Amino acid sequence: MKKTNRMKKAVMVMMAAGMLCACGNNEQSASRGSIGDAPEPKVTTEPTIQEPIAQEPGTTTEPDNDPITGGIVTAEVEGVSVRYYNGYNIATGDIISDTIPCNTVEVSGDALTGLSEILPELSAITENSQSEEYGHIMYDHLMDYYELSINDDLVLDIGDEYGVCKSTGEVFQVPAELYDIVNEIAEENNKNNVYATLDTDQITVTDQDGRELEITDPDQLKTLLSVEYYPINAEDEMFEGEKVAYVMDLHNGDELDVYFASVLGRLRHADGSYEYVHIQEMEDHLKRIFAE
Image 1: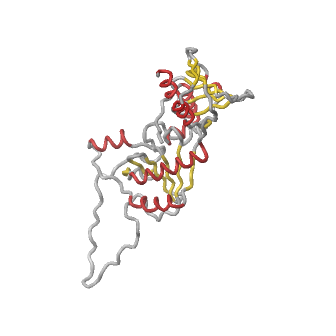
Image 2: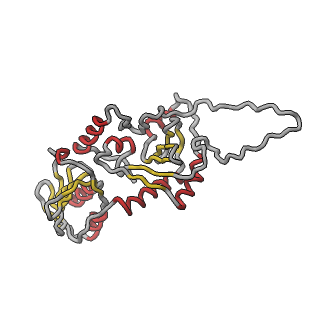
Image 3: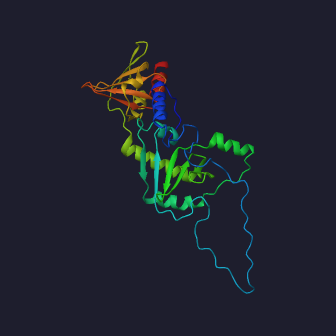
């Protein structure tokens, strides 16, 4: 799933409102890889070397039975929850959470087993803070696509390449297998509990110049009907001055207004009611169809 969106006026207004509400509260900033009130992200520059302890001749040291090897997660993983926003990273989503729904999933079954094996192996990155590699990690690759809460205690923000421990600020590399498991958890939850698709077998589209197009090509129709959307909690004032790029008549009593250069729309129903929706790729698909 992708977390980077173009922000038009309506969403920018949402973010601004979130920032105003955050005054005096512990809200996270919208900067890339923000970790809120946690320590600044860091990498270990000089790993500690423990001197061996002198022992009496003929004595042995009992082996450490602690299975934790990585140093980031230092307890047996008994429970994990995944928190995320569709279309936004954690920091941005927290700012506009009054508008964009936050999703939280308690992990179970094979997914929990997989995470319990991978998480204890995470290790803090050792890198000189003045190095070019350190700069790439901090400013180009550290993203907070998902938040993992481990044993209701330890909180990690992860992207598809790197992650950060919120309590210590330690940065670690995210194994592909870890990200794949978390991403699959989110996608499964989206499929079952979050996303909807347009329910129709006929669509007529009118663009902002008044051109009308009946969608008759089976592939084009399939593409439009596959676009997933979810409702957002938005007020009309947020969309004042926004331009409608396309109007989709679904021939079932519903019409969808797709806003210009946005990921948002308004789904209008036959009874006069309507809801604002996040509908990611729809405008791009319609633009391409009209260009063909």
